[in-house]
Image (cartoon, rainbow, N blue to C red; front, side, top):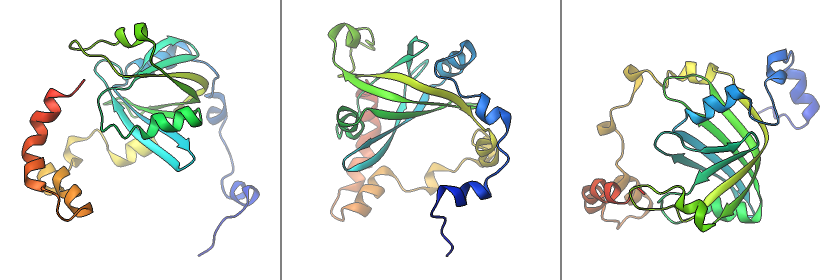
Length: 202
């Protein structure tokens, strides 16, 4: 196997960077970038810490982040599995990256920056949903923002229902857990999970 080991060797293969690939990067939200980000109900949050990397899915009704200004966005930390991998990384290394998906659009928005974890009571209260509040809010300062080439989403036909997998053909969450822990009670987990999720969404 031939391995690329230097930046120079890599750049020799990937030449002819287009003007658009460079011009699209800004250090703050433009009005158009803000519209795209506010339309996104889903984002992947990438963080880094002493143990390595983490990438966590985040989703919310209406919009997954709240835009404060052209350099700041807020991401509430709603109910999850309490591993807090992303939050642990952020408090030790503030570097983060976000990738936003907008259903129906092949344009993916990206933000790179730094983050902090806030438990300011007024901030938590401002995200109230069904009488509940996030336990913390990620405050992200933008270093750069840009949109991603659409080819990956076009190739994957990600929004084409005709390409969707039938969930019945895939392993259930309980089956995935049992594969990792042989004595796990798959049947009970799968039976109780839908109701438990519905009651603990926020």
